[in-house]
Length: 353
Image 1 (cartoon, one colour):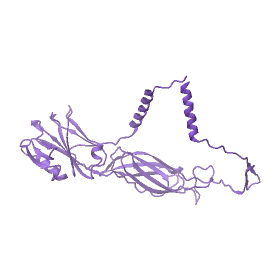
Image 2 (cartoon, rainbow, N blue to C red):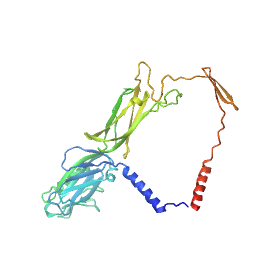
Image 3 (spheres, rainbow, N blue to C red):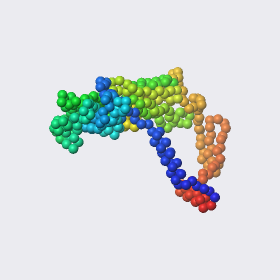
Image 4 (cartoon, rainbow, N blue to C red):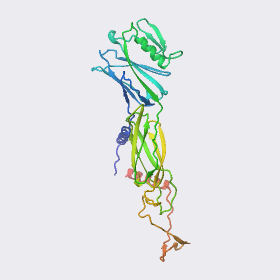
């Protein structure tokens, strides 16, 4: 009598497999920014961003974070660690749907009185002076200031002589995910090829690079099929001027001469680019080495074919020998439904025994 594992064990095994797959999926790499830095940083939509720094005095109420852009404002707080450091994360969901443009993160410190004297009223969309209980300006909703105007007004409000709060800011730009492929040119068969380009994806993000033959056509058996290429995943490296870099290397010694298509696509972000290049013959004159063939001089010729239902197919080559292939009868294929029914019946019988 056969014993089968309990259903609970099977479910647990499936869950473990799914968790292993989930942990194997690469995550987008976050960009870390420090308030007060003057460096120009560009991120792509969907890139997480960490804001890190030091807040002296260890304020008990934490720090107030103002995230401001065109038609966008988000205000929240973050606690300060025991060593006076802090970290605030703009998650992928925060940046995925942002419009392209400039964004400012302002970090507000409550200073000596231990409270924020300039606050955001989410119900009205107003920035308010806590000391006077009077509104200062509209930052969200109808009639609100936009982008740089809102940031300037907020900086003036917190920097007022009657307010003891202080602040630091960091600026970055958001753009749609994009990547480019640098020109490749023609290559001689056997050369190492380095394909590279730029992208605004964060350093540490992954791209898939695929090199495939662009000239695949049905060919005789004595010729190479022309199916050759390479592929793999590359990691985005830090660049400059808001553009990071990537690079992929392949050996063309196994490439059949012809045209090739390079495709680069994001693993997590919707970004793609393509380019073409040509592999030329490496042999003398018009002679090309064809990968996959044991000998480039293989030839064949058929002078006559006779069909006979009894004796089979008789082929007469150019040589004196005659080859007769015996007649064969192909069995009718068993329907898939019959196979599945048989397997199901077998399993049922085993369960009952």
